Length: 334
Image: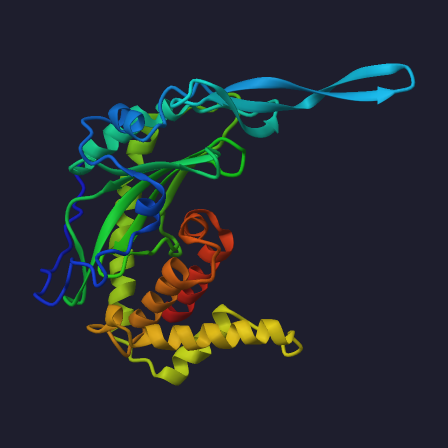
C-alpha cells in the first residue's frame, strides 16, 4: 500500500517546528520514556519497562467472619488482573475485570508497531509508557513529513497505540496531529473521517496486524481532512469578543453557580484571554485556528491540576478534556 503523508503545499519559512518554550513537555513525554534509539518495538517495550509483564487472571475470593467461623466466598463474575513488575520481579495488582475479558499482553502489539513504523517510513518509536499504575499503556510513532497550515504553522502527525488492562478502553491505534511550537495534542474527530481503529478486549479478540494495516489509508486520509479544516480556520478572522463567546460554550457556567465556581470560571477566562495573544500564538493571532490552539494549550498545559503528571494523564485519558477540544473544534469549523 502506498500512501502519501507529505502535505501538498510547501511549508513557508514562517512555519516553526521549534518550540516556543523548549522545556515544555507533551503529555507523551511527561508520562513516557523516550525510546527513539530502540531498534524494534520489543526493544522499546523493554526500555520503557513494559515487557515481560505476564498479565494473568487470578480468581477472586472474599472471607466473612461469622458466628460459625470464617467462610470463604468466591466471586464467579470477576477476576483480578495481576502482572509481574519487571523492575522487582514481584506480582502486582492491575485491575478487576469480568471473567470473559481478553488479555492483550503489551508484547501483543509489538508486531503491529513494527509494521506501522515500516509502512509509514517513520524513523522509529518516540515515547512509550504506562499510566494509572499500569492500567493503560501507550506507544507513539512520529510520522515522516510535516503538515502545514496555510504556510505559517507546522504540525506533526503521530500514530499512537493505546492498550488497556482494566476494561476501560479497547486496544486502539489513533492518528493525532501535534503542534511542536506549543506541544499541543490535537486529538479530535471529523465527520465521515476515521481517526482511530480499535479492537475490543474479549476472550476471542486478537490483534490482527493485517486488518489494521488495511485501514491505515483511512487514518492517513484523516490527516488531509484535518489540514483542510485547519486552513479554513486560520483564514477565518475572529475577534476577542467572539473568542469569549467560544469560552462560554466550551466551559458553560450556570447562572446560579456558586461563588467558588464563578471565581474559578473568571480566572479561567482571564488565563484563556492571556493565551489568546501569548507567544505561542504570535504568528497565528486573530483567527479561529488560534482560538482552537488556545483551548488546546489551556487544557494541555494550564488547566488546574494537582501536578504535571495528573494534568498529562487527563490529556491522554479524560473524556471531558477530549470533549472540550472537540466542542471547540466543531464550533470553529462549523
